Image (cartoon, rainbow, N blue to C red; front, side, top):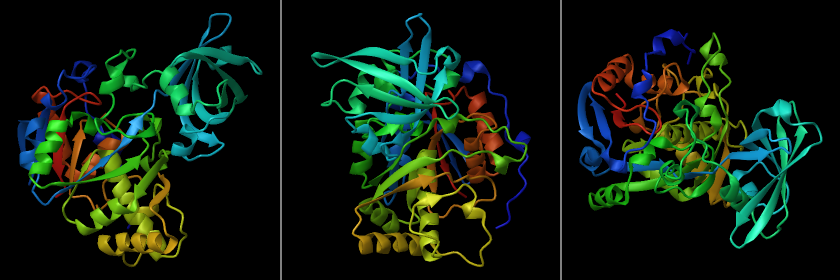
Length: 403
């Protein structure tokens, strides 16, 4: 397909500061829910969600778990250095593996107050872990690429334990506040399982055990995928040409059972959150890669879906190609990366409905929403603002059906 020209100003709207939810509601499923179907908008509560999904729905959600990725160190002079974990570098780039490492690890990071961190200086911090005290060290090994090596003096303790014991919850910058104790549990879905995200898949924050019980009683099936959300999800678009925006790369891990479930429920798939959309649509394009003989690595570049082709396989053909490949290689799980960029002009291959929060103006996520709703996204967001919906990560929800 031909890449359309995107005028970013068409995807801006005024978001008053008071509309941004700074704290979560006391009950997860007490949030409002905007329902959009057949161009009709209705205002409900999230607890109504089981009544809105057909019984033959396959609900796909992202089971990534947020790690306390913000590590704070104090120099001997008193200066505070903040290190934010971005992407693992060594001894592996695979997030689940590096989280279990019990020896030095290297991460690409963002560094607050980096000018105060002298070359060669080792930052130290003491961590209380179970009945012992661990010393964590940080060494800046490449200032330009912000690579930091972490060491700790207990070879029985995994890096994930070090981070859990010492890090702060990485709240989105637009909340403009320090994390509190409540954030440890509330900036996490009830089904979070695989450590590695530095931002929550916030559409899932509304779900409760009770909601899942109602969904299961109705016969709705569930599938789990993993996309480790990166800090790039908050990166505003600054490029004059939208397609030149450096789309963030995120790791995905999907097991064969989930792919089989999706393949057998095509036409009935509803995703929880934009990260699940990105995962399922990326898997379609991975099947295309396999069918086109373009390599076996799961790696979807941001504009790969927009390359000119004479024809495309169906979603079933693409997913079956993945299953055939996995069976041939005796793979239980596939792992790779995606930087897929979904903007108006894209045609969804797998997803039929999306549960999602309300997103920042002029962002890649608003472009994704506009791809679902067309120009109606403006009407939907205007209605949400007029009806006092709470916006962004801790805000209210919506169920949007792709037309």
